[in-house]
Image (tube, rainbow, N blue to C red):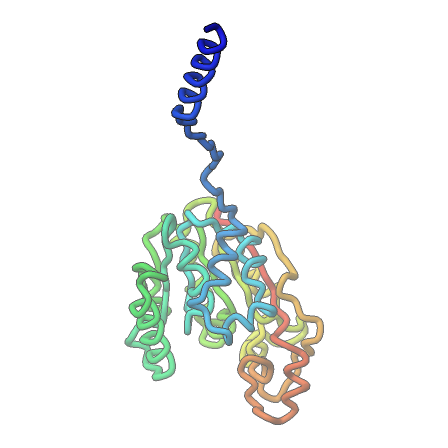
Amino acid sequence: MQNRLLFALIAALLVTACGKKEAPKTEYIESAPKIITLTEALKMAIDGEHRSAKNKARDQYRHPAETLEFFGVKPESSVVELWPGGGWYSEILVPYLKDKGNYYAAGFGLDTGSEYRTKGHKALLSKFADAPNVYGKPTVTVLNPPNQTLIAPSNTVDFVLTFRNVHNWTINEQDSAVFAAAFRALKPGGVFGVVEHRANETMDVVEQAKTGYVSEQYVIDLAEKVGFKLAGRSDINANPKDTKNYEKGVWTLPPSLRLKEVDKDKYVAIGESDRMTLKFVKP
């Protein structure tokens, strides 16, 4: 009798155990929002698929990440780019600033008196309009000195940047007006960043500019004359291979290669020009 009761109890326990469902396991996965650093955000803009292989090939000479980091541009900055031309730097700056910052393209305008510049300005407008997901709606202003120099409202922007343009303004005696326009647009403490083909100091300034080169000291003096203070200089974009003595000036070198196939390998081996990279601050 006792054995029967024991067997019955064991059987009941087995039935209960078999019928009991095991509690589901809960997995806790620790997660945190990914923090994108300034360097990563800039790299994303530089590596973006919207940039052509041809433009990316220039990065080795123009060092966009190092240059913009030297100037101090952040994703939330307000930035004016003077004469962006075809938009080589715009392709980097606008996506970088699109979500948190502001970008002003102070372009040639449509009433330039130059077919080349008018065509270039139209191309820039088309670039922005054709890819709104990349560029959003950047503000386009006109820099056509000396008459049109309102590149942004006065005392409102963090940065005014120019890349390889100073010689054009110097040739036409417009450089002082342009530098003054940059000074007006910047907030106190704002930065004026200049990248320009660097001439040997011995040449006459106007003759230098006709070859596409301008002396570093001339640019510093020009900026200080309108009120800027020199805050730093860098050799990020220096090229000691550049002799600065060519038949077609700086345009003999890549990417222009004005002599076409004549000594092309020689000039390709030199690379793009030797460039100053200067950082000025508005007191």
